[in-house]
Amino acid sequence: MALASLVQDLILVALPAGGQGGARQNAWASMSAGAARARSRRDADTALAAAVLRAERRQRTGS
Image (cartoon, rainbow, N blue to C red):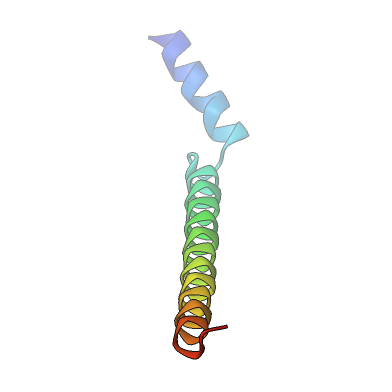
């Protein structure tokens, strides 16, 4: 039991927030990656819609 207590004490010294800082960093990284994916999807949707619109205009004008 003394060894387990010693290990817990060392972990608390090394990670005083009990690992919460690492969890926050992981959450922030995940949120940032999700926002980047969403931005990429919006950009792709916009580009695709513009390409479809151009194709429809060409088809109507016969160009």
